[in-house]
Image (cartoon, rainbow, N blue to C red; front, side):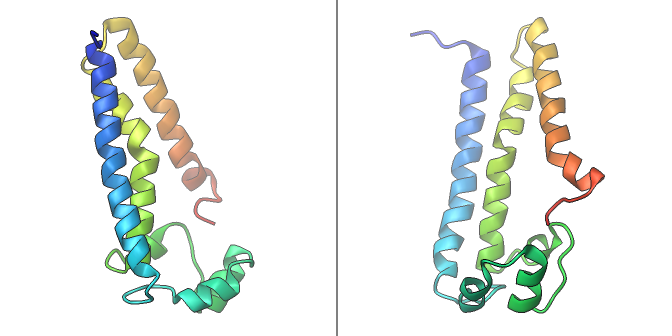
Amino acid sequence: MKIDPLNKTFGSVLELVTTIGLIVMLIPGLLSVTGENVYVDPQHMVHNWDKPSEEFWMDAKGITVYGYGWFLDHPFHFDCLSLIGVAILAFAPLLAVIASIASAPKIYKVILAIIAIELLFAIFRPLVLGGGGH
């Protein structure tokens, strides 16, 4: 079976980034259940999970959270590192589309570029227009 270079590139990049994201998410996520080296104590998390974000953070950690800094500023805590894995998974389709542009025929380059712009807009719109991370 012959696989088009565009599809092979897209699939390979998607598989690689997904594998990295899953590893970065799952291993620290499982370790965070032990309660060791976590940013939010699992007991506080369970008791406050049903609350809106603002109340959750105030009751669980005594902080006010704005955006995504709360886990990006603490990458060495297992629960925060696990969320970085989730972010990697969210970027996987975008990275696969961008990587595919180089091996695509001319018309597909335009289409893939438009898709990449749409994905970037979907990712950054909440941050620019408000409401991101809350």
